[in-house]
Length: 107
Image (cartoon, rainbow, N blue to C red; front, side):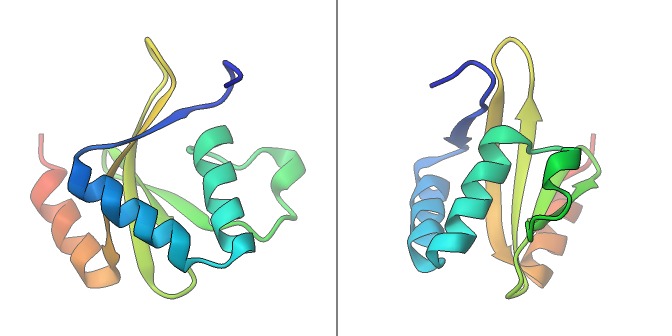
């Protein structure tokens, strides 16, 4: 894997299984867009990708949230040091994501 890409890690096996299920349930274009986003630019959209129909990402407290067109959300943390890692923390619908953020963004 090239060193400029982020490594994806689920916080737990349960989250990993949910993430795998999510990827399989998405169409090829949506899953490709999600993976490209998480591996290449989890915090911002580079200028050359601004025209690409890519999932919206917003900073929510200390975490990042990826918005799917169907209302689901993916919440993750990003570490640039010592390794480039995207830690997948949560997946669920809008209301579940709000509750998760309220309960986990303190501190």
